[in-house]
Amino acid sequence: MEIGGRHNRRLFLLGGLAAPLAHGLAVDGLRVRSDGAFLRATTPNLQFLTGRPLQRLRNGATVLYLFQFSLSTDQFTTIAHRSFERFAISYDLWEEKFAVTRLGGAHIATSHLDAVHTQQWCLSQVTLPADGAGREQPVWLRMEVRVDESKFSPLVFSSPPLSLNRLIEIFSRPASSAQERWMAEAGPLKIAELSR
Image (cartoon, rainbow, N blue to C red; front, side, top):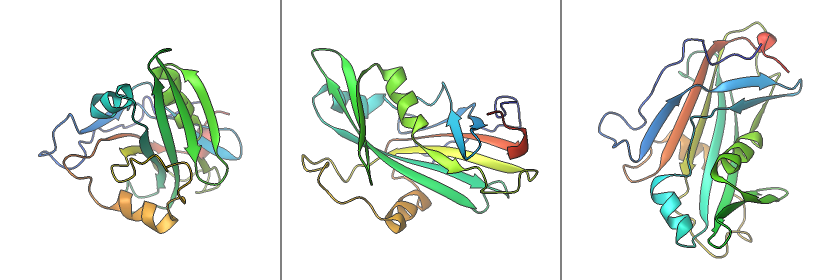
């Protein structure tokens, strides 16, 4: 069965109580499933095409988003496993549709998507190995999205990928008060109970 919608979910405000909600939003309802080899997450409430990033997109800019999907066995005191993805999203003013490219090793792209399908496509590209923890061990999972404020550049598609150490550093430190970010969590759950 799919787990996450009804199990001990908690709301978190990123960056502490001082961070304005316009810049940091935690949502409830991360749903996690296993396809055998990988864990995949969906959530209808993780809407990151909003606010200032959406304004930039509608003004013709390409906006870079960083995703971290992490697994913890101790309720996020430590992170046992994590994966990262980086996406460049643009907006076609004439068609009023989004295009998105997954950056990194092999670029994968799609286009002519509305906001809902753009967000779903990005989430579908971020996975964790299903053997990242014991199948009967309680685990907690978190999907975090941040806007990469440092890379608004026309050379984004030819620039080298961010290193793993750099990505860990970005997600390990609190987001600045101006940085856009979103998060959803699920747990505790058992990988053995997740549906395919």
